[in-house]
Image (cartoon, rainbow, N blue to C red; front, side):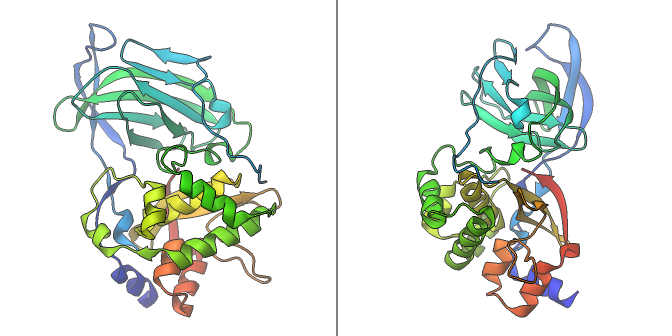
Amino acid sequence: MKIAKKLLAFLCSVTLLAGCASGTASGDNIYIDPVPVEEIMLEDEAVALAASPAATGTALMPVASGTAVDKNDRATIDRSNVSDGYVMVYFSGTTQTKLKVQVAGPNTTYNYDLPVQTWATFPLSDGNGDYKVNVLENTTGNKYAFVLSGSFKATLNDEFAPFIRPNQYVNYESNATNTVKKAAELAGSQTDPLKKVELIYDFVVKNLTYDTDKASNVRPGYLPVLDTVLSNKKGICFDYAALMAGMLRSQGVPCKLVVGYAGTAYHAWISVWTKETGWIDGVIYFDGSTWHRMDPTFASSGGGSDEIMKYIGDGSNYTSKYIY
């Protein structure tokens, strides 16, 4: 407990958007049909990510194939590639209000911000099962109206399919040229996924510092820009985890960005997959006798002290809530 308190006291409290549940209220939806339909009451869950300090060799990118879509005159949900673990959404209209995409899977409901007139990618983090995707537009306060909905059943090609491509939270598809190049430089000629993990992890831990000023001022809805994090060589835990996940995915190593609790505070870390081991939840690499937890924030900001590393290595200190 003293170790946990020491770790959590080290870091600053802020809030970030990671996902939420929703309630409902009645209202009118003018975008689909001119008949009364349900309006959603949507409250952002303030997630304090800053409150705590089988390699393919080819980067796989999402594509809006257009072979299976739900569409109206304002938005498109492209579900052509659900077997690869993702859907894409495009808002073609114009609006001055906030837009969201709600991805309701078999176990968890995720809520994301949606940009205007730009394809956005959303992972099917719950794996196989029934999904419903809603495109929502803010009306007043916390109320959102349906713009478009689509339902489908996902049967994934692989269990790691949602975690091998870029998405909103791990975005190396655009504005991350240097991140992808750096990952390739670090990996070199290595083909062993765990060796790539070790090399990239070591780089992130040794070259990034925890940004306490950013932690004090970051706003809800913040998303890491990977090349900016790489260039600035500092960030909050969300930045650490997203940068490392982006580097690994660009090198063909399936990687989950996990948001949850470290002790009693919100935190972000990563998990990786290899053909030999399957999912290695919350660890880094095998040093010959032990697996080490893959928590780049604590490992970096803690300076590698025995107490910090012992805390990181104890999986019972971590509870996952959302996976991206």
